[in-house]
Image 1 (cartoon, rainbow, N blue to C red):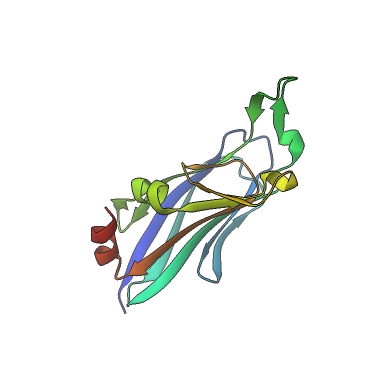
Image 2: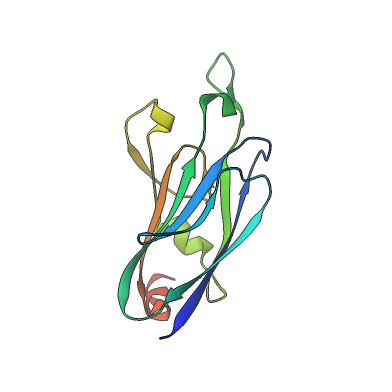
Length: 144
């Protein structure tokens, strides 16, 4: 059985705020931190046999008081989780994630459920989902 390595770095724009993050591959949670207080390197091995997969980043613990808004509803400061340096077998996949991933959230309970593109930061409790297939090199060739 061949495997590929998945790597990324996760962080927090305001390490004092206890944002939490989970990372899942299909139905297996392989990263779970309730307070991202510094950058963390994450690694996980993935079976490279033929298959369909879903990689999910789940932001949790975000509260309304983690965002400062002025009288005109402008955001003055905001704690956000950062996901960067996404790699499959050492190949930089930030662009693919930002192009193909979907970020679904409900503005921390203040709005309707919505889906957006993902640009590397999670500002509301919700899920970023990237569907991909293996063998990974075929999928990468089709999506780069």
